[in-house]
Length: 101
Image 1 (cartoon, one colour):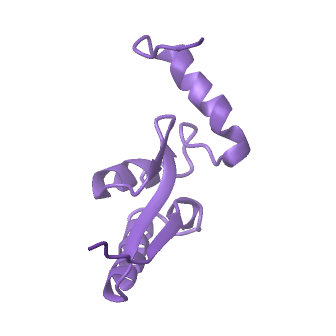
Image 2 (cartoon, rainbow, N blue to C red):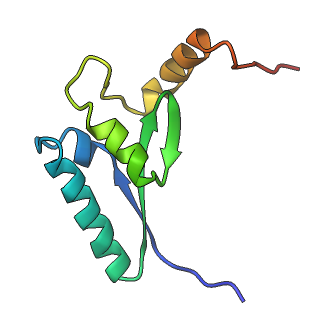
């Protein structure tokens, strides 16, 4: 039997660019995730970490991302920037491979 539960997607922008300083932004995100769980849902914070899009970040990943808010290494991006950001990672990481037909 399949059981369906509501999935709540929280943009990392809420924790990263909300104006809350670190570590208050982590506390806000954790609180919102606990409210979703208490309501029977599954929280999934979405963001891009090290050039990789993530849906459902672990606590350590969230801390790594939002602790750098406002630094020159943390960029606010939109979905139109995903290809560019992924390309930068591929350009600077020799372990990436490309496949083509």
